[in-house]
Amino acid sequence: MDKQTITATSALRGSTTVPGDKSISHRAVMFGAIAHGRTTVSGFLDGEDCRQTIACFQKMGVAIHYDRNQGKVVIEGKGFEGLNEPSELLDVGNSGTTIRLMLGILVGQPYFSVVAGDESIAKRPMARITEPLRLMGAQIHGRRDGTYTPIAIPGREHPLTGIEYQLPVASAQVKSALLLAGLQAQGKTIVREEYRSRDHTERMLQAFGVNIDVSGNEVSVSGGQPLQARDVDVPGDISSAAFLLAAAAIVKGSDLRMTNVGVNPTRTGFIDALAAMGGDVTFENERVLSGEPVADIVVREKPLHAVTISGSLIPRLIDEIPVFAVIATQAKGRTVIKDAAELKFKETNRIDATASQLRQMGANVQATEDGLIIEGPTTLTGAEVSSFNDHRIGMAFTIAGLIAKEETTIHGAQASAVSFPKFYKTLRLLSE
Ligand SMILES: O=C(O)C1=C[C@@H](OP(=O)(O)O)[C@@H](O)[C@H](O)C1
Ligand SMILES: C=C(OP(=O)(O)O)C(=O)O
Image 1 (cartoon, protein in one colour):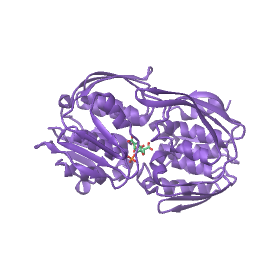
Image 2 (cartoon, rainbow, N blue to C red; image 1 turned 180 degrees about the horizontal axis):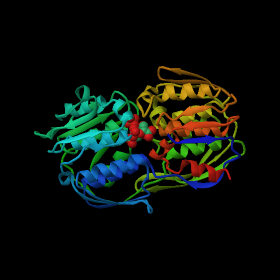
Image 3 (spheres, protein in one colour; image 1 turned 90 degrees about the vertical axis):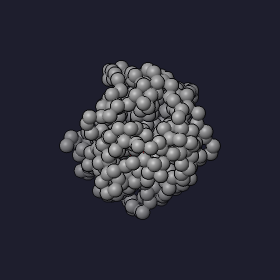
């Protein structure tokens, strides 16, 4: 496994862009594939996860041209009915978003398909998707009664039926899968969640001409509506920006600008949490790009104090919690993260991975059933840590290494290629 050695850095300064939003990139390819006409996607994330999404839809016969140098993807969609039976396994690699959203499409299709991914995907729960899809009449086979991969879809014999469904845990992946199945179902599909998860699917379906009702935390869609192709400009990923934001917030003297970052309110929990800790972070040049709010984010290092994060804030920063825990080690007081049990079901168990390795670096941290408790500030000391093949863990500990005494070695650092392929290069450029 690839490793990276990290030493304490000088201030991070200057201006940078961040790679395209992962959630929006996946959706642009999928919606382009099931729409009628040509969709051109600009600013596409050249990460491993999104490339798996392209490959899966190519295996279903969709003509997709990807120009990696330009970050441009051109998709020739022929509607839901234009997808063909794949002759091979649909391999999603490490990507939970690909498998869960794609299942919502596959269950409405008349052909046989099998989906699976890597070792991490094999451990991630699929019952949250397969249970409600079965309630819609979907035929699903798979390991442990279709609750883990590999999953096989024998091909729809009867039309799906719309359902009314309350999500047990806020999840944009489950919500999106049900809406995509709902578009192929008879009647209406209504999805409710206690807390609002990211709403990129709702926004992009609307942009593709679908009539979709959003009222508070309830979303509904009627079956049988076609999608009409349209071009998509993908903003920078706030989840990737969060690593640089975190670094600039804690490395002395830093002053950093990130341009063209998506600031959809369902994704800005990390910014809100950092501001609540006394962090100096502002938005400039706010505008709308392909139906998504976008801004330049400016952050300057400033002393931080502890906060408690819980409830509706959690889905708004779910992927940023490992790096949030790193900055909490530098904040004065006790930081409490609760209502975040979902972290156990990501690429790795992110509660355990964060707690055990932060402790190795000298932090005062305790793992709880649904989060973490961190006492700060503490001086971190370099250590040998692992990404556990989880991009967010590898990158979070890289940020910890930037403020640690002595060297930190990140084993499995190549995991960053899933969502932020030029992560190490970008960090080097900003600290020169
Ligand atoms: O819909 C999406 O694009 C995502 C939803 C979230 O997962 P859940 O739906 O499991 O919360 C998030 O963690 C993931 O990185 C991307
Ligand atoms: C959880 C993540 O992604 P996915 O569920 O798509 O694997 C992530 O990117 O942090």
